[in-house]
Amino acid sequence: MAFLEPEGREKVRERLKDLAGPVRLVLFKEDMAESSVRAEGLLREVAELSDKLELKVYNRYLHDQEAAEYGIEEVPTLVLEGPAGNRVRLLGQLVGYEFAVFLAALKDTAAGRSDIGDQAKLKLDWVAQPARIRCFVTAACVHCPKVARTALRFAVAYPLVQAEIIDVDEFPALASQYEVDQVPKVVINDRVQFTGAAPEEVFARAVALAVQGEGRARKTLETEGEVFPQNPLAGQSI
Image (cartoon, rainbow, N blue to C red; front, side):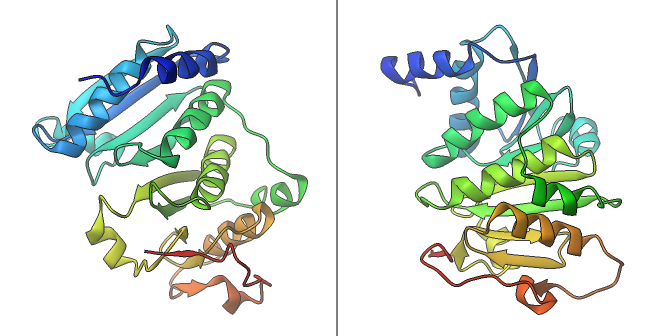
């Protein structure tokens, strides 16, 4: 079964032809699970389109040592490894708008750097503790790619930032745990959260807030005095 149509395959090949460096795609899966089968099939087709891509596939339950080393909790999970490390993670089948986010993340990971605005850098440069960004999305959400791309750019650029893009339709338990009723929703270190297509500098502010001190309850960005306008991009109900 082909996951990429011939025309789509050539478009992807064109996107990948100028990758700046090698990228290792590490997929953790569960055998016979439909989402894992589809994710693996798609990634094998993508990996064939560039000699700079290497695909490694692990069964989450048979390769528990590798899963522990990568900190894998859910399947399917794809980890992108490049010059800047392995802090970029995508959970799900990479369908819909998420596939475009994946391709963009490949390019940033290959380069080992990403473009971030000066105002965001001013906030992120002060991050001295690990920041784990969970970005909840759906494949059909038109506003999710912007927020997902921002999270992944932060992870590529800053060694202490890890970003996970999570498809709520495939991981309903996680969505319930984090009370996701609109997407995109971002939760950082289980302590700071916001919903909607936040500007890059607001997102960076949230990351900086999340790593300040310990033992603080989870809160929304507004409780820290950040102005976060309620506009048409404030979130898409699920």
